[in-house]
Image (cartoon, rainbow, N blue to C red; front, side, top):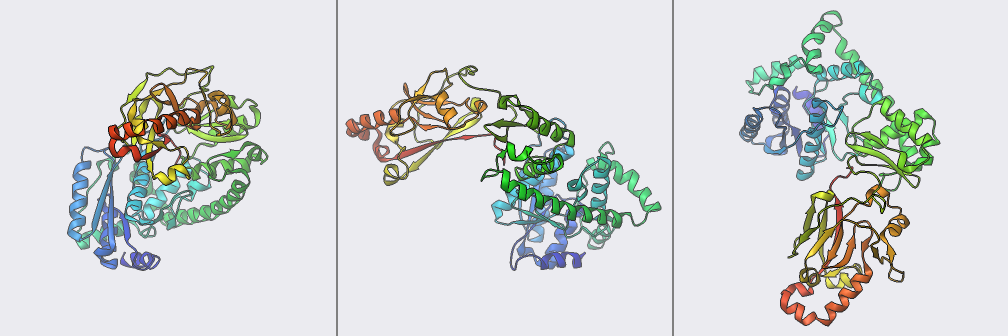
Amino acid sequence: MLDAVGVALGQEPADSRIAIAYSGGLDSTVLLDAAVRVAGAARCVAFHVHHGLSANADRWLAHCDQHATALGVSFAARHVDVRRDPGVSLEAAAREARYRALDVLCDSAGVRRIWLAQHADDQAETVLLQLLRGAGLAGLAAMAPEHRPVGAAVTRVRPLLHILRAQLEDYARVRDLHWIDDESNADTRFARNALRHHVLPQLAVHFPGFRDALARTAAHAGAAQRLVDELARLDMKAAASEDGHTLSRDALVACDDERALNLLRYWMRALGLPAASTARLTDALRQLRDVRDDHGLRVDHAGQALRSYRGQIYWEAGDSGDAADETALTERPVTALKWRGESVWRLPAWRGTFVFTEVTAGDAGAAHPTAIPAALLMGQPLFARARSGGERMRCDAHGPSRTLKNLFQQRGVPSWKRDVPLLFVGDVLLFVPLLGVNLTALDALHADHAKHRTQRANAAGAAAERWIRIDWREDLLIA
């Protein structure tokens, strides 16, 4: 055990912190104990994820905190809300939530590698499950001693991958370790538990070397997956936008089916989306090849929808709705705010937030020519209103006023993204998400501000000299 941890420690950068995913169960308790013995407590940090799925979750959190403190190890925890999308199992949803939480904890601690306690039996179970589900290479690759998923910032390290569960039990017994038992591990309604309790013992009798054989299968699949990922990276360079959030529809459909499906899978992993079934991806590719009307394309998956606009395809929040234009406007109640310097204004009805950022006076005149005097925002109530049709604004300093519909079209904003709140100062349209500040209104407000600057300064105090930039941020974005 200590030898395996020592090998993993040798792969770590000198003097780096050793982050360990610590659930409090047998496996992670052994890993934490061995890491402390090899690397020293001062170098280790234990991360715990509270899923809230068990009535004992609070007790487990307390146990982990106390045990880490007793070892002299830094400890941090994060609560998660496990939400299941249609067709996603509770196990898969909890796993994804756990990895996301661990990534956040790593980021907070400034570490880019985390040790996980999966062992040889875990790997065998995973390969068998993936085989029974008809998984592809990515599924069969299962677990690797060291792996960083596409698009992730944190590398997952598994020092115990060649250690048997029985060896972990022996180590824990000799060291007199104490751990918690998750009652759900005995529930054979879960596929993994059924394999663990009913299938693996029989395999051990008739095929004693099955764990090593399945580990070799995983290694072969992993090598093959790296090759197809490299092909996908080449295709991404030709098809993806600079930020990777959109793909060229023409470039994708120019590929043969297998290569196009490989690119779609790789792109989705890079965006942090869960894997889709072959049937779902095949349907998406069929629509991309056959549907001529951009608005006719929609493939739903894991709370997201694949859409197309002006030759680009991308994923949108699945509940973002269809075309929001003069022909299909959504009515919403007007929301008001008496602004007093708030940095954010949350608008749940639009699933987004107005963000107010202070800039210096020098920046306001140069780098941020659309910055607004804070006194103007304080002078009258702010209103967030839905579009009613026919609104106009000027985005170009030397251009004419145009309808929002024309400006959205000019900027290539898909119709289903045009359902945004319009920000008014009193009765004046000041800001439109995805378009920016209404320069006509800004010029008038600046003129009024200059005319009454003394009065406004006296009324608003120091705020008269502050300048504010307004932005809009959607709540539901692909990571």
